[in-house]
Image 1 (spheres, helix red, strand yellow):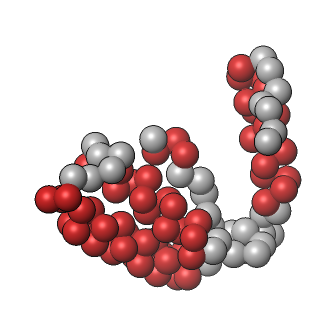
Image 2: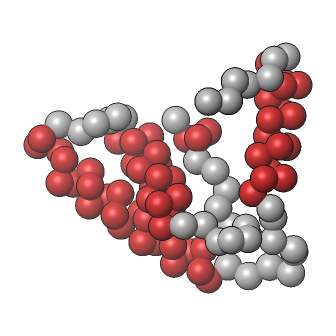
Amino acid sequence: MCRNIKTLFNFDPPATDEEIHAAALQFVRKLSGFQTPSKANEAAFNKAVHEVAAVSKNLLDSLVTAAEPRNRETERERARARNEKRFGTKPQTN
């Protein structure tokens, strides 16, 4: 699950709240072991996702770098090339 969490720092345009929330959700899923929590755990699960997203946003807003911002499309192409090399086939796009 955690391998689906993408680097969100130093992109132009910056990471959206939706991207930060998705990363927080994946992180909490990994920690808890729940894909979807039971009703008894739902409030705690959702609170954790909200808090992790807030802390992540604060972190991303606080970080500084002298490096040029990365381009999302360039990074996507690099990932496709790595996957092709690793798995030997091009991924299907839908």
